[in-house]
Length: 256
Image (cartoon, rainbow, N blue to C red; front, side, top):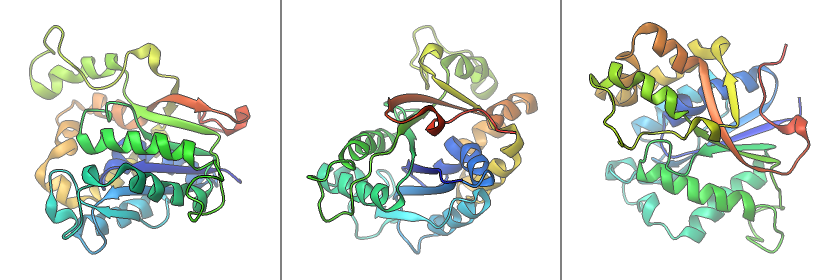
């Protein structure tokens, strides 16, 4: 299967939480899959956890840009925060990976970073620019031969799903007018049923032991009733914002 899926994420564990089912599914179907992670450096604990997660998902070796997490300077000692790197430098780094891997599809976060984390928001901006720039032979001429992915998808959550689980997680329903993660349901263009790969996705999330230990997204999921947690693990949603190739290059439902 000559089909490539490249994810661009902010932190180790995002690949499992937001796109783990998609990665496992396409890897099983014979596609080339890979993940660029913009923060944390080689040799750190979370880099090792990322390697184990990617192995579970079949997504190759870590592609770490090595910048620091906005909130954790220990993530990349001596390196600048990803948020503080000149935009042109960050775009160039992602362009290099796009041109080297030559994906048909690139996945990243929606414009609010799926839930508002500043690193996620910045990864969205950088990836949007890099997907466009990678196809121009006039740009980043020393970063490899031009390559234009056929499609770009933004990982998100339908707002109705967020609202339906909000009380189970936080104990109270969302306040009227409260800003919720995700997008209006009608903005979701692609829904993938990844239930067959949910156990792999859950295992990949648990490979990030340091995050499991401190709670984070794992706490939110484990606080859900079992049926609701199973629904979250078995479904991944995207908003397609760029599409230049034939229909067979799009993400779609599970193949037989």
